[in-house]
Amino acid sequence: FDVVDLIRTKRDRGELGTEQINWMIDAYTRGYIADEQMAAMTMAIFLNGMGRSEIRDLTLAMIASGETMNFDSLSKPTTDKHSTGGVGDKITLPLAPLVASFGVAVPQLSGRGLGHTGGTLDKLESIPGWRADLTNEEFFSQLESVGSVICAAGASLAPADKKLYALRDITGTVEAIPLIASSIMSKKIAEGTAALVLDVKFGSGAFLQDPARSRELAETMVRLGTDAGVSTVALLTNMNVPLGLAIGNANEVRESVEVLAGGGPADVIELTIALAREMLALAGQPDADVESALRDGRAMDTWRAMITAQGGDPDAALPTARETHVVTAPRSGVLVEQQALPFGIAAWRLGAGRARKRDPVQHASGIDLHAKPGDTVTAGQPLFTLSADEPERFARALESLEGSWRIGDEGDEVLTGGPLIADRIG
Ligand code: URA
Image (cartoon, rainbow, N blue to C red; front, side):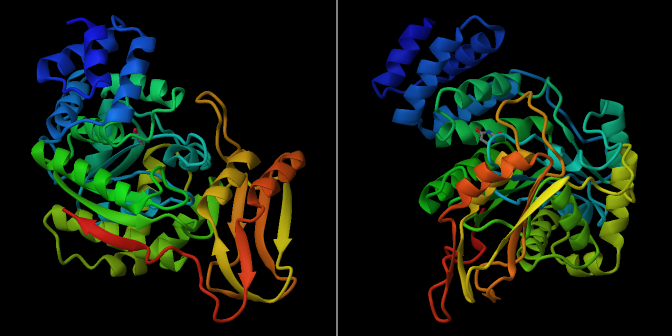
């Protein structure tokens, strides 16, 4: 094949065949197709979309670009979860040990944050001693003994996606449904999980803001998983408002531990329980009493075992920032608005996130919210606290928060964009 012909085909709204897609992904992974050619291809896909069979072929070709894993040797069923990312989304932290406490294996290969969305590995690295990189032997032995593992995906899993994602990131082609769906599902199918629950976000802090587009993404991914023999379900969830009260890294670990101790913010508990129920139902335990595992300490025991197995000290003090800046309510009333995206950007500017892949994150930087939309507040009461190691970061963070929250009066509409869990697909 000639890559220029394939680019022209997609540019002119034609359809690529299986052989063409297989060849293209293999040639790109080997470096035979240049980045500028693939950039033109991804932009053509971004603009003109892909048909069902093209998306399936693209996903399968990306899986075939690397190694695949297999959990048949484990004595327990596997079930995994993936979130498309959001602001304050720490759900994996309480969820993985919660589900594993029911005797199910949760092989959670996670990523790092980029831009305003946080990364699970960055959060866990706030815990002194905790390691994201495990050998294959360590990974399998922890799945068998503890049940849950949250670690970095090895370089050998869907290498085509790693190259393609880095290219999309710098060419404005991330937000395309065929590309997002194939990217996420190639990794999850290659990972070898038997069941998968997708948390597909919509709203201000999500990848795709429009609920209709998020639904299309969810449906596309559920179909890809099901066709590949992975039992797949998706929840469509609201990311217009930050999830929970903590946005950052160490503070999100603190909040997760509160949930594992039977407390924590209502929205984090609700989503953790809903996702746990779906994961356990797919693993053959539709009647699992998820709430009591949070109340009676079983989920906490699994968390402690999981952190310890990966070198971390679950009792160690988490880092705290050198400087804080408190924003107070200018008047009494009701908090009617708190937009996820500006809060995510502010936490990122405080040092909680990274602008480039190699940047370090500051684990103690971030935002703690003291009120959520719908809460009554009185003049002078703290609304949120910014934390950073370098006080010069506060001004830029505050700039991004301008106009992102509002105090109204009793009876005003509270702008949350609807319920937390909007729908279930699958
Ligand atoms: N996450 C991924 O892994 N890939 C995408 O394309 C978007 C989000």
